[in-house]
Picture 1 (cartoon, rainbow, N blue to C red):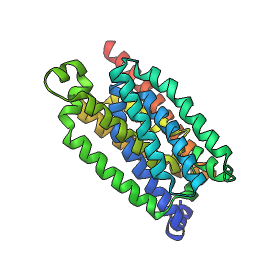
Picture 2: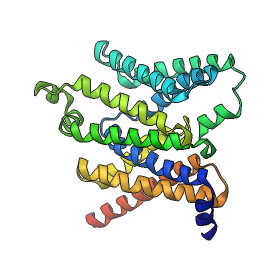
Picture 3: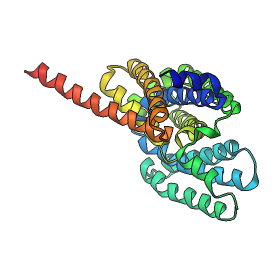
Length: 276
């Protein structure tokens, strides 16, 4: 344990990676219950893969990948929102159709670049060596925006989650709320890419919500439970990655999954004891 704290004091990149993993865990925990309650689990995965096209363009042109990835993910969200609202295509069907389209665009763009090597693999699976102070600031800005949106639109989001048709009947602009949430998910996904990678980010968007849904008896409690467990899993995931010399992204995801299995096991055991 001493070495971990020594390295934390010694190495700047290690401090950045710990702080970034905590912020990513906090961000994912805020949005995850909304994704799970609204059954939008597929959107996290779809958005992450859509961001790959923008990321590839950023790598090819040598610009900051974040803005291109956000633009790509937001465009994906708008198309999903349009297809869902205007053509009545099921959201998961639209995502399933567009996900490989955006991935294909990304692969084609990267085929034109000579940088399709280790850098891109780091974005696919996460790499703590990529974390810089600008990433911390970016995560803090995204966290502030996310907290503002979730608090300011808390009643509209609750109506949207409970019954979309009834919410629309009582004057809630459900189309705007849907687009707003999709954009928010897009930005969170892009801001988390360096820690978890594009391939693994969907686990952080989904698993905390599944755990908190089993434990929380209200939306507010689900958010609180999601944040607590997500931050704990981020810390433990980074600790396992450090001591076993494994990539932090997969380590964090496996921690989440083990906690989910434990939650299911104890929940079933408690239910059985209550029936007996």
